[in-house]
Image (cartoon, rainbow, N blue to C red; front, side, top):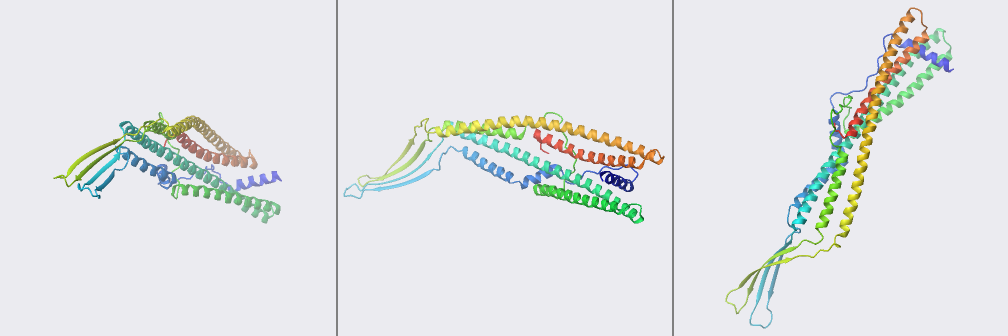
Length: 408
């Protein structure tokens, strides 16, 4: 039964396929949208982008606040005191004061350094988040392209089988083939239609995921991304980890500088009225309070800062190791994809030449029909493999740039 089924398929291929060389299905491309535009569109829709941008406003406000010498809002005080007894002095006092705590020079510089490191951290995390969004766009784009290539291959296979079914049914009606052959051809077509339906669903789902991510209706042109000629820029993921470590160290320095509360200075003006005095007495007072700090006061904060430093340092080391591994893996994948495409292209060229020789031999009566059909079927499979390897190479280019931390 297996031999009969294969022979029936080969006969159908010979009857349906044209005599010219079978063309490889082209990869889906859409002109008008670039990968950079797709990444930017995805960035505008990404919740993580809104979060990190909101943090940017937060650290900018903290940086402005760190430039102020005031450690607290000024406090305005009013007091009134009168002699309500039987004294003949009839004494009255009125006082107005304003006070505020202020940062010492070491505390202020530590706060400014922490604000600067926080700004750098958020900027670095914006780059890392944008790279992560670009990685999602790259993967979704090439997943959709691969699904489309598979769909086209299934549709092409179905087209060949439908042509086979038409020819078999005509020969069954003419009495050249048995009815069982017609039923066999029919079930092959039905099975191929199921495969096409499944491939169409997969292609639709892949494109829908891309559209949900970017908000764009179509894919960018599926050309392999250009690779860097020289040294690649610093990886945004590693830069973000290093910026977090620098911020944690700045927080530790601030905790060490804040072992005592900020001092407080107050300025007051007093007016004294008394019956025995001809004129009121005015005086100005200045008060300074300097808290005495101890190492135990901020021990908890310093310990927490040390924990954060240890954590982010370990994360930075892990990211560094993973980045090196990702680059090596992407480099190997890229080399293998190039080799596979070259091999598939050479195989397709050889099979095209082989089929051309078989067609010439068949016309001269030197080769049989089954041999020619087998050669044509293999040529078609080789052309499909070339299309699939082109998509794999495009994905390998994207993954290599992603591993290097290169944005589109």
